Image 1 (cartoon, rainbow, N blue to C red):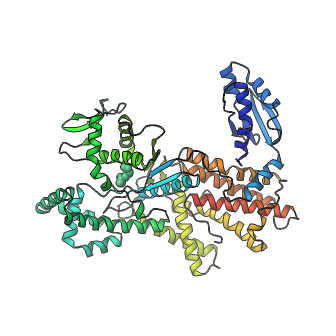
Image 2: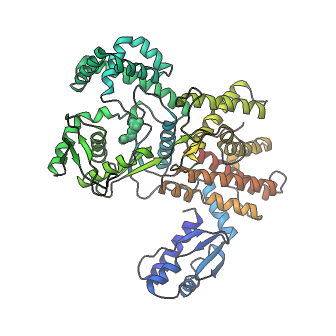
Length: 575
Ligand code: ARG
């Protein structure tokens, strides 16, 4: 509403509908040459078989934009360039400044969204790949909630399957205390590797492990108790990582693979009644159309192995049913790495064939690329192992502490620790979120912690700087929020337009579940503020300009803090 582009859209929609004789999109876009551009005359002319410039002229003559524009000009084949009236921009800003939603209105069509993210595996370490799903998922949760949707977080941990036989036997061998101690210190891989090594060359251990799997699958109480201990030890460790990362996930969000086990037979039965099941090499499968292997043969989704066991696909199909039918979700988001694209697409397709994913319900794979080392290969530690996520986070905070000590020696120890944590963790999260999730990115300490460029520290610093303007001037920030804003200088105008574009930045971000778009917006905003601050004196200006500029500054700080907040990043008031 507050966004001038959507306001223009609303003003022009009836004009276009009138010309078209049916609803037609005015196609309002930002523009480099003017404040905005209306492009809808071209497609409409094509549709009606008339001249686009004539349509553009009718739009201009309608006078619909009179109240918001000082200049409306037809250009080229039929584009319309708009120049907004300063008073209109200032009034829109004033309306935003007194509210607390920064112009963002709740989605008129709220959805029930289940978002599947993080999902580490029990008794396995969390690595850089888990950083991506956890941080992207967390940001999407915050944005979707703020946009007015009902969001259900599901941490689909890998807590079931054949390896649990050997893991439980290993737990018995070393004793619970030793196991708990090791996992508390984050040595999940050590536990897993030790179990694996024994399994590889100890036949007696192999036999015990196989028996244990059978006991687990038949829910033998003693075995279940041991399994629960393993799950608890792992989730306690995951929670330590979530704490450091400052994400919303809690134990209440755990919905591991084990939860769906008792319902999987029913999934198979339903596929059978839908007549979708076929036999292939002894396994029970579904052939969704459109999937082929390298030899161009139809590719099956195996839902029950030759041995009768269920698998990852059965579990994910059961998940779809549960999310749509029990939770009433109409949007299922899967924040899962690109290597699982085909698996998920096949699951979605089979769910559709079975009638479990009927519109408006839809499932989206929010896919992401890898985190690479400087050699552009998978991020590895010096020992050659995949880097543990906790170690990455601890190093980020250490490096940030060094940078803060240098930049602001006046902070006391407690303040410095807190600021270092926000900057270090913010930097890691932002580096991840600010690159298009589809792409791989190179993990680069110096770049992510730099106070210049598209980084968290730069945005946090811009925010802290505005806070310090108010501190030094001894002006209460809330006191300027009902000030009348006046836009005289071009940098003021640029900043104003940027501030008003916050709602569309969030819309664009959510349209493709791409947090980097919000990052780009915030970076642009910070840069617009810096050039405003350079060219337009604030404290030295006379009233009423001084108050108007303070109001612009306050609104910028609020937008930066809020936008970073939607990304799961804190903006300290001093740093
Ligand atoms: N635990 C899995 C893994 O680490 C990810 C699960 C993703 N979610 C899902 N519904 N398949 O690979």
